[in-house]
Image 1 (tube, each protein chain N blue to C red):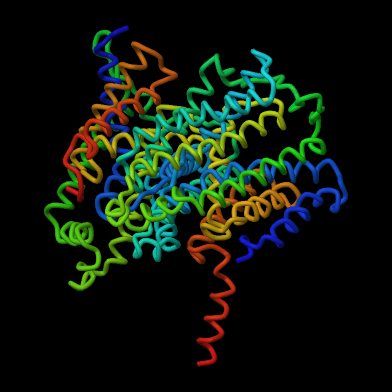
Image 2 (cartoon, rainbow over the protein chains, first blue to last red):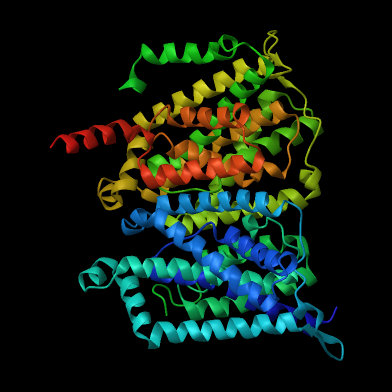
Length: 288
Length: 319
């Protein structure tokens, strides 16, 4: 086993974790909303990309934006149904409803795409770069670049634009923001559409690394949980650091200990952090 | 109140008990009644957490599966009888709940739910991979239920014979839930849920109450797992499938929270649709998820509020 290769794998996987988690991070940081259907939205994004690319003959570079549109539509629909609960900040209802949405998405995807596994064989996966014993595909490189760009872009959007300021005001106090004349409803819609589009984008980028199944949403979401909690609930920068750290940890754990138990190991890490530092490793609260 | 009526409740119980025979006594009818009873017991465990503590535990499928796995392993490998497997199922589930409860003691709302969901996902990966638990094949060859005691033969080889035991388990569970709600612990749980500061001022330790309710609720869900193992004769990691989680949650919220017979009525509605009016596996997923979403979106306090909503609507129209 080449340790350096495992660390490179870990960095790539870590950026993938961070990219998949970015929608949830914003959702939590801004709207204090949760989405237990996140894993199934990831699955849907992967399948729409696969269908557009492998079945409809759309180029891979266009299949991803198509999946993002589908993801945003699902996000908007979910938010429409949950709007009342969102304004009431009825977290119990929202949690259960998003679990229900995840279940419905699983059923729908299995009906539309079939329940057999598929491979999203992107053209970038075939391009390999070798440096002695080390290697990397263009897909891996694209994941890292995309994750870095999305995180820089989101950080800029939240901290240096008017829209970002409005979003942060809603995060701070939705009722006061409404009194100040901000259209809170539009912000909530925007954030959920972003969550849908972001996870579909992540799926389009990350899914070529593994076979895709309509049932994969159930455990796919767990790494997002770990990233969000480790990074400090709602912290954009914290999520990035936590994602990369978790990627390296799971990669080394899989190589050195047991690949079947990486999810369990990530969970133990999560528990350890929650017990030692309940607010996560990063600073908690608010999108920043 | 209907559920406190000492005359009406036994009549309802009698009608339910005679239900399968009244509906023709076919094998599929008995199977449906047995499953409704088992899954309702499973849901009552979660009901205590959602309705009384106001939190959403997503780990109750783990306690259900614990009952199933403990029963399957102890009955097939150590040939323990059903009384002992029941005691062990409950003991293991309570121990596990104590551990999870201690870890999640300070967590609230979505962080609590998130960690309990993670517990379920991890439990599923362990169950599917650990050879001790049968790995992906699960555990097969579980003997039929045998509760024979003091010379009395109490065996159940099929769903028809299993129905009286499932019914008794259901009745005991409902009785325990009613006693819990009337107890000091039940009152303390509600106070901790609605006003933790007031609870502390009244000398209640919220963490202790949460832990006690969590452990008690795990014991109830594990009993369902125990009986399910005998009913199905094998267990596998699919006991931790999202289906059971969705079923439990829908059972708890469909009729309305803190309705004594709510989880039973909701479980019956869902199972009747799945067993007799099924649209196919994936369509049923859409139905179950859709019912859960629409109930919470349109009637956040459950279908029990529909009559009041209709009355209010008619009142508004008149004025």
